[in-house]
Image (tube, rainbow, N blue to C red):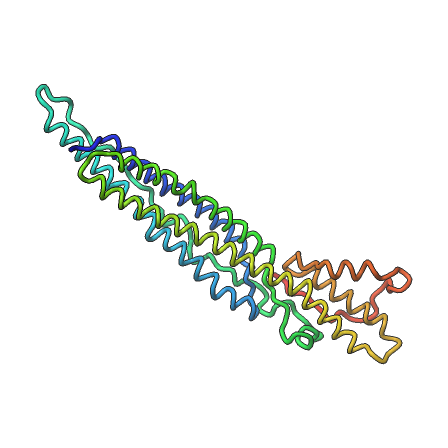
Length: 306
């Protein structure tokens, strides 16, 4: 039995609309990611994370723009042609006087090759040295410089990936509707079309699931750096300062001075959230009588300009 041409034409349009929507979602996400190019940083800790995150991100974008969207665009054309074939079949089988000969609807997918510069989706910008430590405290205390990954950039990337992952129901909604439409269509090719649409739905679902995984990966790195900067490093560094100052009655002021320098480094580093609750708590616990009003020693910490 011949299918209803309008069902195929509608399916064709909705496949193309799904492709356009996904293109738009990923283009918006790419804009955010390009501004979060210091998320990974360039020190050892950052490079290890970047080595996983950047290829993952770029690989997903290539899957979308080189596989998924072309498949949706192509299937839109196939459905359009199938609908026209059914329309011609109806025309040929119609009795005289015949209706007007059907014309195939025009459908064309936009050129998506320039939607996203995939190679620009990198996160390895930074000082290359972590937060510069001229006094060697972080090396002495924990054996490594403090990572220079920008936690605000990490949060932006995490939020953007999370929002994109939540688009999954919207992205598959039309495909789910079309599957039901063709399941109820009495045509020879309907069963095959249902299978094809289910494959496309699975592919879209997989892509958006990866977005949620990337959000979790960025969030885990942000949490790791924030814990390192607000807990592990400050305690280790201050313990190291205490060791260096033992035995000198005149070094109490120097200890405060060094800590002020350390605090300034934290406040001015690329990751503003490094402003650390531990520093605020420590500073608020020092009385005005005890804490010097002016620094008497040179800064032992400096920040890398980004």
